[in-house]
Image (tube, rainbow, N blue to C red; front, side, top):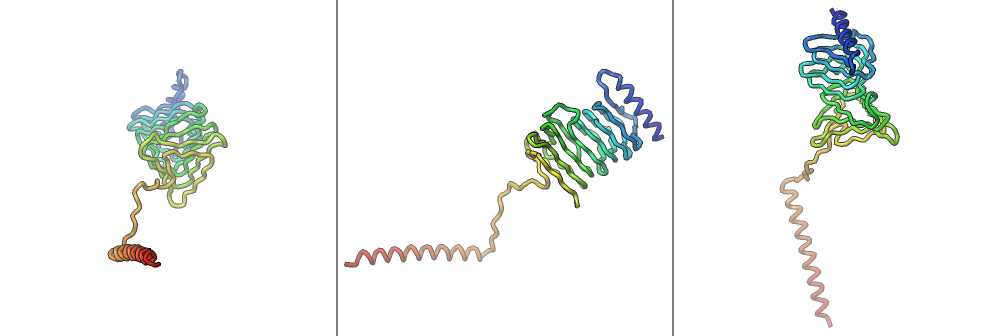
Length: 235
Protein backbone atom coordinates (compact mmCIF):
# COMPACT_ATOMS: atom_id res chain seq x y z
CA UNK A 1 0.00 0.00 0.00
CA UNK A 2 2.77 2.56 0.76
CA UNK A 3 4.28 1.86 -2.68
CA UNK A 4 0.90 2.31 -4.36
CA UNK A 5 0.43 5.62 -2.56
CA UNK A 6 3.91 6.69 -3.65
CA UNK A 7 3.22 5.75 -7.29
CA UNK A 8 -0.07 7.62 -7.22
CA UNK A 9 1.60 10.73 -5.83
CA UNK A 10 4.44 10.45 -8.34
CA UNK A 11 1.97 10.15 -11.21
CA UNK A 12 0.16 13.25 -10.04
CA UNK A 13 3.42 15.18 -9.78
CA UNK A 14 4.64 14.06 -13.22
CA UNK A 15 1.32 14.87 -14.85
CA UNK A 16 1.33 18.36 -13.44
CA UNK A 17 4.99 18.85 -14.34
CA UNK A 18 4.00 19.10 -18.01
CA UNK A 19 1.70 22.05 -17.29
CA UNK A 20 2.78 25.63 -17.92
CA UNK A 21 3.45 26.10 -14.22
CA UNK A 22 4.80 22.80 -12.95
CA UNK A 23 3.90 21.80 -9.44
CA UNK A 24 3.56 18.84 -7.13
CA UNK A 25 0.04 18.45 -5.79
CA UNK A 26 -1.51 16.00 -3.34
CA UNK A 27 -5.28 16.46 -3.78
CA UNK A 28 -7.75 16.32 -0.89
CA UNK A 29 -8.60 12.74 0.04
CA UNK A 30 -5.41 11.26 -1.45
CA UNK A 31 -2.24 10.00 0.21
CA UNK A 32 1.36 10.14 -0.93
CA UNK A 33 4.73 9.01 0.39
CA UNK A 34 8.34 9.64 -0.50
CA UNK A 35 9.04 6.16 0.81
CA UNK A 36 12.32 7.14 2.44
CA UNK A 37 13.84 8.11 -0.90
CA UNK A 38 15.11 11.41 -2.30
CA UNK A 39 13.43 13.77 -4.73
CA UNK A 40 14.63 17.05 -6.28
CA UNK A 41 11.63 19.20 -7.19
CA UNK A 42 13.63 21.73 -9.19
CA UNK A 43 11.79 24.64 -7.50
CA UNK A 44 8.33 23.31 -8.40
CA UNK A 45 5.50 24.64 -6.26
CA UNK A 46 3.99 22.16 -3.80
CA UNK A 47 0.37 22.03 -2.65
CA UNK A 48 -0.74 19.45 -0.11
CA UNK A 49 -4.48 19.17 0.43
CA UNK A 50 -4.42 15.46 1.26
CA UNK A 51 -1.75 13.58 3.22
CA UNK A 52 1.95 13.25 2.38
CA UNK A 53 4.82 11.62 4.31
CA UNK A 54 8.56 11.79 3.78
CA UNK A 55 9.01 8.54 5.75
CA UNK A 56 12.62 9.44 6.51
CA UNK A 57 13.37 10.61 2.98
CA UNK A 58 14.73 13.88 1.58
CA UNK A 59 12.79 16.45 -0.40
CA UNK A 60 15.02 19.04 -2.11
CA UNK A 61 14.54 22.38 -3.88
CA UNK A 62 10.87 22.79 -3.09
CA UNK A 63 9.35 25.98 -4.46
CA UNK A 64 6.39 27.84 -2.95
CA UNK A 65 4.98 25.35 -0.44
CA UNK A 66 1.36 25.30 0.78
CA UNK A 67 -0.32 22.90 3.19
CA UNK A 68 -4.00 23.64 2.75
CA UNK A 69 -6.65 23.43 5.46
CA UNK A 70 -7.14 19.71 6.12
CA UNK A 71 -3.82 18.83 4.50
CA UNK A 72 -1.19 16.86 6.45
CA UNK A 73 2.58 16.78 5.97
CA UNK A 74 4.55 14.23 7.99
CA UNK A 75 8.01 15.73 7.47
CA UNK A 76 10.02 13.10 9.34
CA UNK A 77 13.22 13.24 7.35
CA UNK A 78 14.73 16.27 5.60
CA UNK A 79 13.14 19.02 3.54
CA UNK A 80 14.83 21.94 1.76
CA UNK A 81 12.53 24.88 1.02
CA UNK A 82 13.51 27.55 -1.47
CA UNK A 83 10.55 29.90 -1.33
CA UNK A 84 7.48 30.77 0.77
CA UNK A 85 6.14 28.18 3.21
CA UNK A 86 2.54 28.41 4.44
CA UNK A 87 0.98 25.80 6.70
CA UNK A 88 -2.77 26.10 7.11
CA UNK A 89 -3.22 22.42 7.91
CA UNK A 90 -1.05 20.05 9.95
CA UNK A 91 2.74 19.77 10.01
CA UNK A 92 4.64 17.11 11.93
CA UNK A 93 8.29 18.20 12.01
CA UNK A 94 9.31 17.13 15.52
CA UNK A 95 11.83 14.66 14.02
CA UNK A 96 12.67 16.72 10.95
CA UNK A 97 15.44 18.80 9.46
CA UNK A 98 13.95 21.85 7.74
CA UNK A 99 16.14 24.18 5.70
CA UNK A 100 14.82 27.51 4.43
CA UNK A 101 17.42 28.93 2.04
CA UNK A 102 15.51 31.04 -0.50
CA UNK A 103 17.21 29.19 -3.37
CA UNK A 104 14.06 29.32 -5.54
CA UNK A 105 13.39 33.03 -4.97
CA UNK A 106 14.92 36.23 -6.29
CA UNK A 107 17.99 37.70 -4.55
CA UNK A 108 16.97 39.99 -1.72
CA UNK A 109 13.37 38.73 -1.78
CA UNK A 110 11.11 38.76 1.26
CA UNK A 111 9.77 35.27 1.99
CA UNK A 112 6.94 34.18 4.27
CA UNK A 113 7.26 31.27 6.70
CA UNK A 114 4.15 30.43 8.71
CA UNK A 115 2.72 27.50 10.62
CA UNK A 116 6.02 26.00 11.84
CA UNK A 117 5.85 25.09 15.54
CA UNK A 118 8.31 22.35 16.63
CA UNK A 119 11.36 21.24 14.61
CA UNK A 120 14.32 19.04 15.48
CA UNK A 121 16.85 20.92 13.31
CA UNK A 122 16.05 24.26 11.69
CA UNK A 123 18.14 26.38 9.30
CA UNK A 124 17.49 29.81 7.83
CA UNK A 125 20.16 30.87 5.35
CA UNK A 126 20.65 33.25 2.46
CA UNK A 127 23.56 34.23 0.22
CA UNK A 128 21.81 37.31 -1.19
CA UNK A 129 20.44 39.26 1.77
CA UNK A 130 16.96 37.73 1.70
CA UNK A 131 14.53 38.19 4.57
CA UNK A 132 12.15 35.68 6.15
CA UNK A 133 8.94 37.02 7.69
CA UNK A 134 7.45 35.09 10.61
CA UNK A 135 3.90 35.58 11.91
CA UNK A 136 3.40 37.99 14.81
CA UNK A 137 3.63 36.08 18.09
CA UNK A 138 5.02 32.92 16.47
CA UNK A 139 6.87 30.53 18.78
CA UNK A 140 9.10 27.98 17.04
CA UNK A 141 10.57 25.32 19.32
CA UNK A 142 13.92 23.90 18.19
CA UNK A 143 15.09 20.77 19.97
CA UNK A 144 18.34 20.13 18.07
CA UNK A 145 20.29 22.71 16.05
CA UNK A 146 19.20 26.22 15.09
CA UNK A 147 21.34 27.71 12.30
CA UNK A 148 20.91 31.33 11.16
CA UNK A 149 23.41 32.07 8.40
CA UNK A 150 23.88 35.11 6.16
CA UNK A 151 26.86 36.46 4.27
CA UNK A 152 29.22 39.37 5.08
CA UNK A 153 27.73 42.53 3.60
CA UNK A 154 24.49 40.70 2.77
CA UNK A 155 23.07 39.68 6.13
CA UNK A 156 20.12 37.40 6.47
CA UNK A 157 17.12 39.12 8.06
CA UNK A 158 14.43 37.41 10.10
CA UNK A 159 11.52 39.62 11.07
CA UNK A 160 7.82 39.91 11.79
CA UNK A 161 5.44 42.30 10.07
CA UNK A 162 4.87 44.26 13.28
CA UNK A 163 3.26 43.87 16.68
CA UNK A 164 3.94 40.96 19.00
CA UNK A 165 7.46 39.54 18.56
CA UNK A 166 8.25 36.04 17.33
CA UNK A 167 10.45 33.69 19.34
CA UNK A 168 12.77 30.76 18.76
CA UNK A 169 12.49 28.67 21.91
CA UNK A 170 15.36 26.25 22.50
CA UNK A 171 14.79 22.80 23.90
CA UNK A 172 17.18 21.25 26.43
CA UNK A 173 20.59 20.77 24.82
CA UNK A 174 19.71 22.71 21.66
CA UNK A 175 22.60 24.49 19.92
CA UNK A 176 22.62 27.83 18.07
CA UNK A 177 24.87 28.94 15.20
CA UNK A 178 24.33 32.56 14.23
CA UNK A 179 26.38 34.59 11.70
CA UNK A 180 25.58 37.73 9.70
CA UNK A 181 21.96 37.85 10.81
CA UNK A 182 19.64 40.72 11.71
CA UNK A 183 16.76 39.78 13.99
CA UNK A 184 13.96 42.36 13.86
CA UNK A 185 11.23 41.87 16.48
CA UNK A 186 12.42 38.26 16.72
CA UNK A 187 14.18 36.74 19.73
CA UNK A 188 16.11 33.59 20.53
CA UNK A 189 14.69 32.72 23.92
CA UNK A 190 12.03 34.81 25.63
CA UNK A 191 11.80 38.49 24.61
CA UNK A 192 12.85 41.07 27.20
CA UNK A 193 10.09 42.14 29.54
CA UNK A 194 8.74 45.66 29.11
CA UNK A 195 7.25 45.68 32.62
CA UNK A 196 8.90 47.98 35.20
CA UNK A 197 11.16 46.22 37.68
CA UNK A 198 9.83 46.43 41.22
CA UNK A 199 12.20 47.65 43.95
CA UNK A 200 12.20 45.25 46.91
CA UNK A 201 10.67 46.85 50.02
CA UNK A 202 11.05 45.24 53.42
CA UNK A 203 8.07 46.62 55.28
CA UNK A 204 8.79 48.91 58.24
CA UNK A 205 12.55 48.63 57.73
CA UNK A 206 12.33 50.71 54.56
CA UNK A 207 10.01 53.24 56.21
CA UNK A 208 12.32 53.61 59.18
CA UNK A 209 15.35 54.10 56.93
CA UNK A 210 13.55 56.80 54.94
CA UNK A 211 12.51 58.60 58.14
CA UNK A 212 16.10 58.50 59.45
CA UNK A 213 17.42 59.90 56.16
CA UNK A 214 14.94 62.78 56.24
CA UNK A 215 15.83 63.51 59.88
CA UNK A 216 19.55 63.66 59.08
CA UNK A 217 18.94 66.02 56.17
CA UNK A 218 16.79 68.29 58.33
CA UNK A 219 19.35 68.30 61.19
CA UNK A 220 22.14 69.13 58.73
CA UNK A 221 20.22 72.03 57.26
CA UNK A 222 19.36 73.41 60.74
CA UNK A 223 22.97 73.13 61.92
CA UNK A 224 24.22 75.00 58.84
CA UNK A 225 21.72 77.79 59.44
CA UNK A 226 22.82 78.19 63.12
CA UNK A 227 26.49 78.37 62.13
CA UNK A 228 25.79 81.11 59.54
CA UNK A 229 23.76 83.05 62.14
CA UNK A 230 26.56 82.80 64.73
CA UNK A 231 29.17 84.04 62.26
CA UNK A 232 27.09 87.07 61.35
CA UNK A 233 26.85 88.12 65.03
CA UNK A 234 30.63 88.09 65.59
CA UNK A 235 32.48 91.50 65.66
